[in-house]
Every structure is written in structure tokens, then in C-alpha cells.
Image: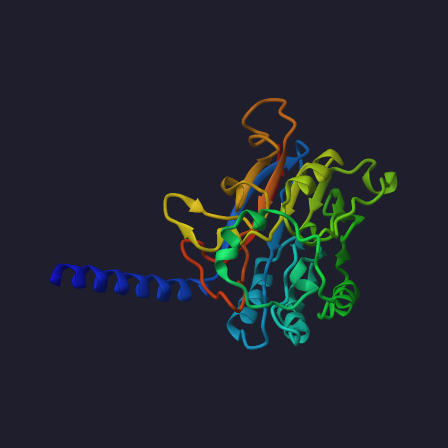
Length: 308
């Protein structure tokens, strides 16, 4: 019985230690650096800052300061892939956080948490098969200032890519974008083709919040050479040596975060392969009801696009 008590005590202590670490890790913000060989031969590098899933509340002053500090990286382009809100009163704090980044060209799409404020949910629901399917039966009315947020960003010069196309000249490159509103709540609609946007572009980028297979397939079929997404939080609670347990969509766990090929291996692994590049951010924040991360530090990514 003494040995059993010791085992139970040790298990409880280890669990408490892991929980405490997971709470600390949720604020251990980092910047990842990834190189993507996707530009035409002879092109100069293009530095793209990818930030996603801020899940910001007004009291998160440390997160706000860290997001503001990302402007020191001086990117050529900022891409944000949604889920910025975690509170109905987060609009002004969000604009404070993003203000320094709006000094650079930027594009954005929304996630479900830019329409609906968070609700308390059992973390176990993310382990259920239903978590891999989009939410097509949402009955709540949106309660966040989505339109005001989009207007503030577009007034600052960023481009709204929710079910839209756009084109930017970045340095010597003409970049064509196609974006989707959030597939997680079935708002995605591929915009009609537009030759004025795509013809003669040096690079075609797809942008979406949740990397559902149907959305990635649609963007790749549309001609995207690289796709940028968020939503997964990289699994959020990962097992060392195993990685993510869930992606909260139908994307496979092996591509829960980081740089991969879509639909197959990375394009550089086999000559002539028709896969696009796919970068999935593991996100900056968490739901306020599950403020934990384990083996999955919150991050933004500096994608350096270079010549193929």
C-alpha cells in the first residue's frame, strides 16, 4: 500500500508539473524561420511574416507587446490567417497589437473566432471524430465586430482576401493572391477567375484559415504555388516524439504545423512534382478556456521565399 501511495503521489506531482509547464509555455512566444524555394529563378528573396490565431483578450499585455515587436523583423509582406479575437472587447487591443505591422504591405483572412466569441468547451471534444468535420450547423449569431475589424485593416492598407483575389507588387515581383473565408464554419467560396489578377504573376499564393483538404485542393487547383494557413495550433498539446494528436480539421497530424507539400511530398523532393508548398502556423494564442500548450511553443513564422 505504501508503494501504491508513492506511485499515486508521484503521478499527481508529475501531472501538476506538466500542467504548470504547459501554462508557462503558452506565453513562451517564438519566431520560426523557414525557407521556401518557390520564386522564379533569379528572383531576390521575399520575406513574408505569417501570424495566426492570436486569440487575443484585452488583458494580454505581454502578447500585445510581443506582436508589436514583430515589426522589428521588417518583413516585405505580412499575412494573417485569422482567429484574432478571444473576447468581445478585443478590437482596440488588436489594433494596438497590429498597428506597427500595418506599416508593411499585408493581406488577411478571417477565422471562426473573428465572428464568434469563445465558449467554454470540454477539451476532450477535440479528440472526437466530429472535430475533423466543418461546423455546418452553426446556429449562433456572430457577436464580434468582424466588419469593423476588416475595415480598420483595409483602411490601414491591408487587403481582405476572404473569398477574394488581389495582386500586389512586392519589390521586383508581381504576386497574385487568392483567399478563402473560413472553411471551419463553411464560409469558403472560391472567387471567380480573374485574368487581371493572375496573368503574368511571378508568384501565386493561396491564403486560408483552416486547412481543410477541400480548401487546400481548391487553392492548389486554382494555381496556388504556395498556401498559407493556420487554425491547428500545431496540435497545442503535443506528445514529444509523436507530435500533434489532433488538427481540429481533416488535415493529417503529420502536417499540423510547419512547411510541407500539398497534396504530396515537398515539391523539391521529386523533379516535376505538381505539389504546392503548404505552411501551417502553430499559432500565437489559445482559447481563454484552455490556456495551455505542451511541446508546442506559440509562434509566428518568417517565411523567406527564394528562387527555385
